[in-house]
Length: 71
Image 1 (spheres, one colour):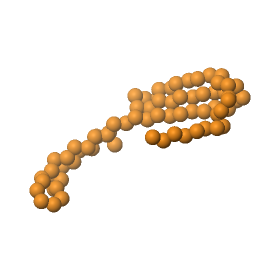
Image 2: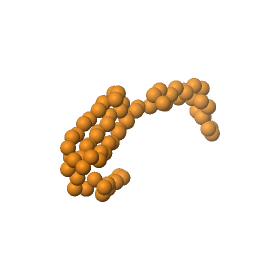
Image 3: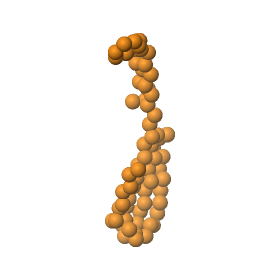
Image 4: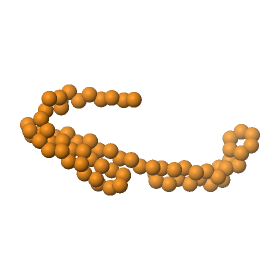
C-alpha cells in the first residue's frame, strides 16, 4: 500500500467540493480552499483484457492468436 502525505493542504478550510465525471472511466475530485488555492484528484479505471489461443507442449507455447481489448 502506498500512502502520500500532502502537508501543503494541512489545516486549510474547504470552500467548495466538486466531483466531475468526465466519462464512465474517469472521475475528478476538486477542492477549493478559502485562501484561493485548489486541489484536484483524478481517477481513471480502465479494464483491459488479453486472451490467447496457443499451442502448448515442451518449451515456450506457440501463440496462434492473441486478442487485446481495452488497451
